[in-house]
Image 1: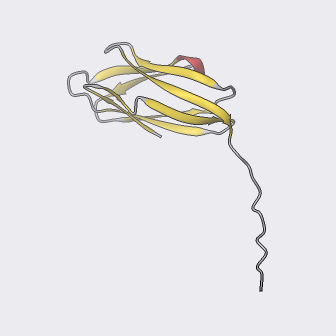
Image 2: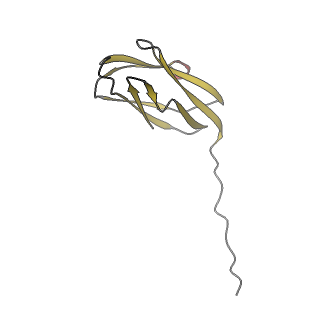
Image 3: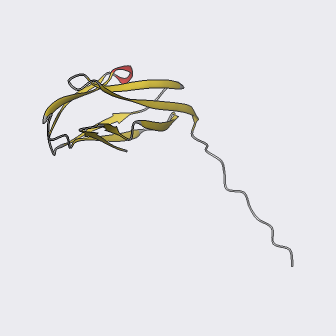
Length: 99
């Protein structure tokens, strides 16, 4: 997942995740006006400094469903993670061919 911190806010502003799945979140600051800002994902205890043009990578594994916010305190931008039920682990069904 890539999150851009732009001059107009985060892109995307809403991210949908599945409970029980591991994700890598790559945060990139492309905001030329604010070249040194923070990315805060409080509910997952993730806090990083982001520098213009550099990538910071975080790993998250949502354990519960809900809506969780992420912020940039210096610019007051925010976004949200929407976590829904566990990822499906369906088995492949066999298909019988009729002849």
